[in-house]
Amino acid sequence: MSTKDVLRPVTNFSSTLWGDQFLRYEFDPQIMKEYANEVKMLKNTVSNQITDQDMGMMDAMNLIDTLERLGIAYHFENEISEKLREIYDLLDTDKYCDLYTTALHFRILRQHGYHISCDIFLKWLDGNGKFQESIKNDIRGLLALYEATHLRIHGESILDYAHVYTRTGLKNVEQSLHQSPLEKQVEHALVQALHLGCPRIEARFFISIYEEEVEHRNESLLNLAKFDYNLLQILHKKELQELSRWWKELNLISKHKYAKDRLVECYFWAAGVYYEPEYSRGRIMLTKLMIIISITDDTYDAYGTLEELQAFTKAIERWDIGEIVKLPNYMREFYKTTLELYQEFEDELSSEGRSYAIKYAIDAHKELVRNYYTEAKWFMQGIYPTFEDYLSNGHITCTYFYHTMVSLLGMKSLTEKEFEYLHQKPKMIVASGINCRLIDDITSYEVEKERGQVVTGIDCFMKDNNATKEEAVAKLHEIAENAWKDINEEFLKSYFHWKDVVKRIMNISRIMDVAYKNDHDGYTKPEKNVKPHIIALFVDPIKY
Image 1 (cartoon, rainbow, N blue to C red):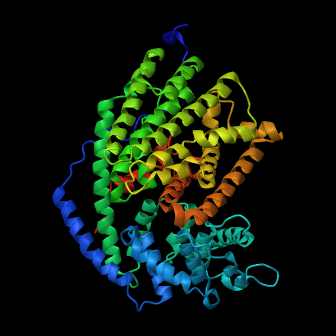
Image 2 (tube, helix red, strand yellow):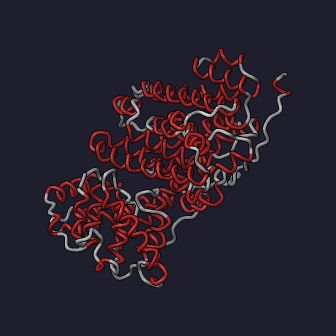
Image 3 (cartoon, rainbow, N blue to C red):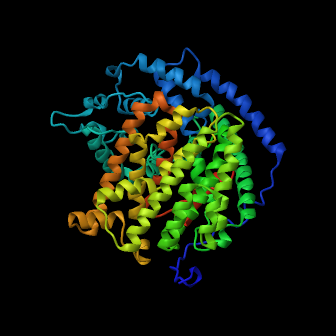
């Protein structure tokens, strides 16, 4: 049977939601200049506030928290790091007299790599190991503790208990908080925990909250947050315009109609990994490689025959344009585009003495495609691997190891040591991949069943354990939650050694929680979970 005679599976992926919207963006350099001048002036004012030697420890920690929540802390990394070092060195947890203060210090210090003990919460337990009745009505304290529990690691039973206790307590009082200043914060936290949220999305939300605190807000912080948000949005729009032009000229999607057209969503992922101005090139590189991998994934998952996929896998393994003649026609231009894109990046990085970086990216690409092929064989041949084998393969095919590796390409400050560290697959990236794989399996299960997929994590667990679907889903959620404990633990262990890498892993892990909220696949069907965030981040500026 010839290629054209093959009966292809029918896919019904939606086309792009965005059309030429970002291609048509009109950039006003004068507005960008005005915003930049405002940001520069306000940064000096805020920097002086952070370094004020007369500021007390509690005020300093509240200021740092506000800076981070408003999305402007990246301007003051050195000042914040120095201040937190001073706070940690002088730390005396016995002096903490309220739950809010304790929980805030715990969360902020852990977010910055300090392994502060969870035993600081023991003072709020009664003789029976239960939380004291007195904290039930401390909504501010409960909310702070709830947010802190998301940084827990294995063996911290008090935080496991606190997580359930505070979530239940906040739900119980949620309806009674009408018109309370905490109402929106509690409502938001129960949907999206701060630690699991994308920093830029959380900043947009908190700016609106902070603006309402008329009596207590710091005008310099609020104005800096607004100008900085809109200034960054202009930069992000320019990047999206450049990417949209490249994507339209490439015209790959018209030749691969079975694939999802998700360039803007890929950029959303890339901006979630790093949003700061200095990573502009990194976002562009990452987005381009993400959309290439997205089409590759759909080719293996929803279109190619096993024979075609075997040929493509071998061609990727050999990484030689001469292999193109061995591929079916529909794969040839795509294969050529893939190799040319990497060559373009290699030429650019070679001029900086960083050509070694491309080797790590290509190795990750090859591994990903090999694992795609393994999954395709399981599916097409009706083979059920053990759940352990499925996860071993699947934490790679979820793409998070690959995406993290290629996210490092555009980070000029990194050396080969960082690439080698990630290449060795530290526990944090494996845990991130497991979390991603299982949440993706849960959210896409019904869609996969509709198109005949028989090998998913849920199916493999059911078969291995003679379990029902409901039991399997519950167990996969439990494993995914435990993976977050691994992510947090390895973040603490590695932060001061591999800060730039582990921050990328943490951020890409967060995107999964945001985009796949409520068991909804926000990449395949972005209308519900992802589209509103894209509009807030890249379309609508903040009003003054």
